[in-house]
Image 1: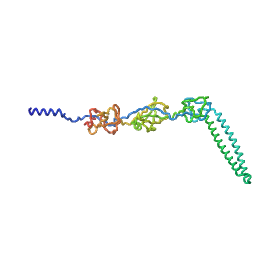
Image 2: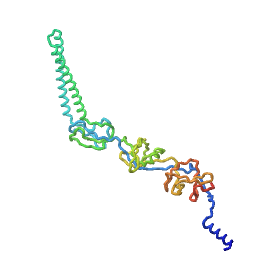
Image 3: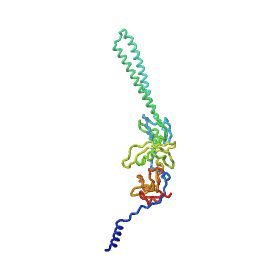
Length: 339
């Protein structure tokens, strides 16, 4: 084989096994600052209104219901009468105790007189010391009996006052559990009372959303085509192990309030730190953004980015984002800005 032919074969083998290395093409791109294209993002999550003050009102004594002046839906003020019970037995008991108290006071007066006379006789030794001590002991016993009777009288007065069941707070009657003529026992609920203004919002969020909500500029609760401004009252320090969600309580910050038990959504908007989805690209399984840095396209990974969604981007407002021909770019690709 001639030397000329051998040279051609060597060149051919070199070309087959060692492809020609070409320099990366410089791509013309357009850029904009992150500040010019950044956008906020709106989130919505379901929530419900919780009643904080719902009370079952019961009698503290027993008796037949004589009057039941409220109905379901009645608005009542604190101290208004809800139920009136038959109070004849407590009044009879009060009269009996008063009579007993009168008798004890008369007995005490007699004992006091006897003690005074005994003390006068003591100087002449006409009465023994033991007899004098007995008179004093009897007077002490009479005083104790009177104190006991006074306590019973206060209890009787309390039973009489308990015959009138009043509203412990202003609210609305949402349920009646008895009726006029029925017999009420102590402790049995008769009325369910709701404080309409004692409401707040219960919300469950994924763990990664809690911090976003805390940094939101405004938070609103939307229900039945109405909007109510709210703010975070507390974040409960418990995470559901199955759903990986955390509960929050939000308070209403306006006079207008939704009805307790209603459902709606909490809507909140982030700061302008999200990159529009058109500028989020995928390279080697990672989502990120191309930034123009010194005539080079730098691919910056965005850890929270997802396909087809605007992505949270921790960029400086002055960072230059490639907004054209990014599909042709690779990391560290030379670029020429043509803005």
